[in-house]
Amino acid sequence: MGVGYKKKLRGVASRKRASFIFVSAEGKNKTETNYLRGFSNRNFVFRFVSSGKTDPVKMSQELVRKMEADGFDRQSGDLAYCLIDGDNASYKNKQIKQADAVAKKHGFQVILSNPCFEVWFLCHFSGSTKQFNNSDEVIDELKKYLPDYSKSLGNMKTNLSGKISTAINNAKSLREWNLNLHRKEHTVEFQPSTEVYIIVEELLKSAK
Image 1 (spheres, helix red, strand yellow):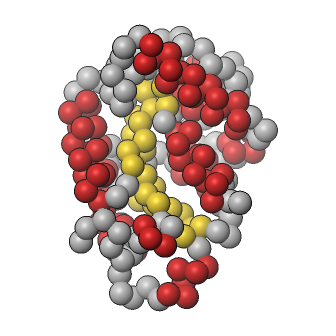
Image 2: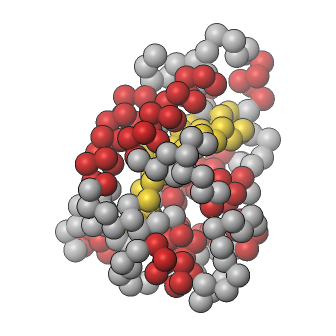
């Protein structure tokens, strides 16, 4: 099935109640899903993919299977995202490019953070362009602002309350900073950076 497909079993009435937002996140990591659940409201329903995959291509493929099974219907307001960590790993550039091709074919968006998703959390407090060698260094920096942070912390949306606008602005500023250095966007060399603001802006829009 191509872009905008939907399963016949889903009735028209259910489409009027809420849109579906499909999200694929890396491995068994609860960081992303716990955070995004904080945006839940009556206008949409999350459909999370829990496949245990970390390879961007396999994650994208698992997302497509979930979209097909649950009747993804873009015309009815459904959205889908594949959240990937770059990990400063150059071999992932090829995988990201392949995942983007799958995304273009099936109507979802690849959301890249580099080195990791926690760059988005850090943007709530700082727009620093400090270079990180790995995810652990990002988390150490984040703990300067949130000493109790751990990947299993379930109330990040609450902990970051009132700072979303700051985070969006800082994430966009990091994007401009990297572009000014002539780094190629949507690659692991584009760091620190996070595209999570893209999905957050959509979630905020959907909540209205």
